Amino acid sequence: MNEEKDMADARIVLAGYRASIDNIDAALIHMLAERFRCTKAVGVLKAEHGLPPADPAREQQQIARLRQLAKDSHLDPDFAEKFLNFVVREVIRHHEQIAAANGVTKTG
Image (spheres, rainbow, N blue to C red):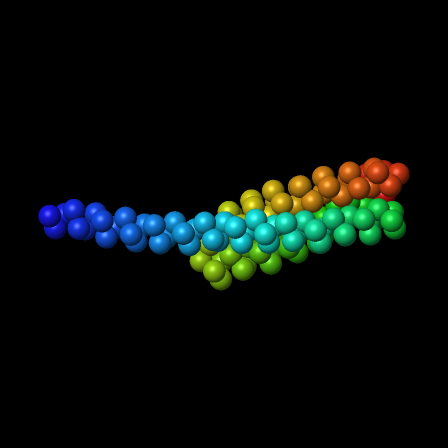
C-alpha cells in the first residue's frame, strides 16, 4: 500500500515537472519566433544596403557572450554554442534568401 502511494505521489510530481517543461517549451518557441522576426528585419536592412548576410565578427562576439551566459547559468557552454551556431546558420540562410530576392549576391 505504501509503495502504491509513493508511486501515485511520484506521478503527481512528474506531472508537475512535465507541465513546467511544456510551458518552457512553448516560451522557447515564442521567443525563437520573435528572434527570427527581428533577424528577418536585419536581413531586409542588409539587403537594402548591400551588406553581406553573414557577419563573422558579430557571430564570434555572440558565441563568447553566450558561452559566458551559459557558464554563469550552469549550462554547458558547448551546448549553448552548438545551439547558437544552429540558429545563426538558419538566420544566415534567411538573409541569403532575402538578399537574393533583392538582387544582392552573397558577397554583398
